[in-house]
Length: 172
Image 1 (spheres, rainbow, N blue to C red):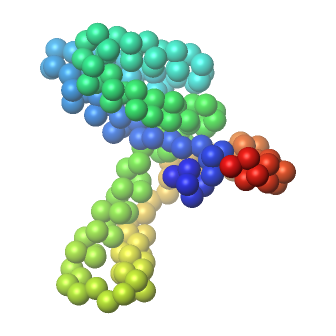
Image 2 (tube, rainbow, N blue to C red):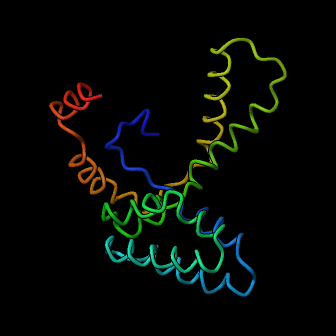
Image 3 (cartoon, one colour):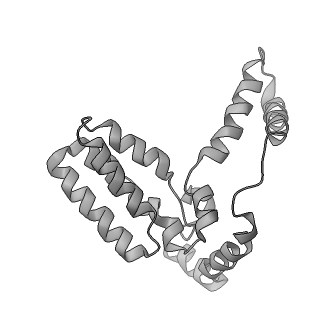
């Protein structure tokens, strides 16, 4: 993602999938305890406290189940981006999961599955576009959509200046 959006682009990993991936490594006895901790952490408003708590769970999992710890550790900070950016709670619930985009991609996949012969890149783009138009009919308003301007203002402050971009390019 950073390849396309740049190093300054904030990335939010799906908290739902992260939780599921971690819990899949645990025994049935440990799942409810760890799930409760992860739910509480992802509901926190303070990034520093949430990061410290997540690091604590990561350390616990290192002793309990190293595979679960590795799963949690992968992109750990990126599961807290919505917290770090102080995204309002209602919008945060929508953006903390990739389910919105995955639903659209699933519909595109279904539409494209019916294509038997592909002819060139333009046709692929048209089929994907057609699939997205089908998906669009099922789109609903994002919970917390009225808070998007607040998020955009925060994201605008993160954009590097042109001078910073030029300096980075020269350095690399």
